[in-house]
Image 1 (cartoon, rainbow, N blue to C red):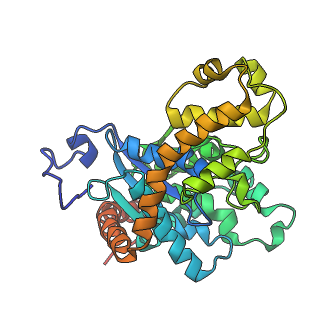
Image 2: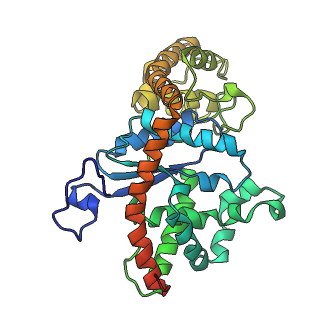
Length: 356
């Protein structure tokens, strides 16, 4: 990664930059700029972005090209792109040492995606469960992009030869497709190990945060009830009100993990507490076993405000300075292209495309 502000020249120019810096690998991850960011996005992805930057070379992407697989209002899309970038920064990602950019500023993503469209097999795409869920029964009327976007996701990763991708359970299938595409490309073009077989980084408890109004449903920015989620930009009063109104049941707090598993609303709140406190869920259960929900909710409120309040305040500050956020994105895109362009040129050569 050519970090023009901090990077020293690599001792061995043939080593990937992360190896020259003694890091474990290169990470690529992205977040779609659609709707408000919420607690699930923070615990499942964005918080981990900041934590990973100490051990890996990191590229964090606002995937605006993925967003338009369903129609987006252009003005809203640009504002939400800045919001995602602001969230990365507010969560502690260093935009000078690592790369924050939006996908559409790096055309190599789309260029590699076309090659991968020609490598991936129709049967592979037909097995993608997320397409089936998003398209529903009206598959004939959804965009071609929604069907093909797993190939673009593979290009997002492999245009940087990323070694690792942090994924939730719902993205594991797409990473498996990325691995299949890399292996088939390497075999088809007799280019052993050209694209890496990218490894997943899967985090533990509370990567799947459920709705505050229904513990059986995933927390979602598309839920019509704002009380179903804690938005990252919520202030302390809004956070407190939403936790107070979070659905529970008439019994005291669970006294065991087995008891909690039978009670999805209680289990969800315990998982949120454990994640925010960096504790094992079993330890939280032991601490609050048999107590009233009101006591637990008071403690969860205090914890959530302490952990999320500074992130929300910094996001709000950054979003009031769009020029600064845009500079981070533009500089990040230039640095991302410095990595992507040589890899694309080598890919074109392997495929047999004549170049200027």
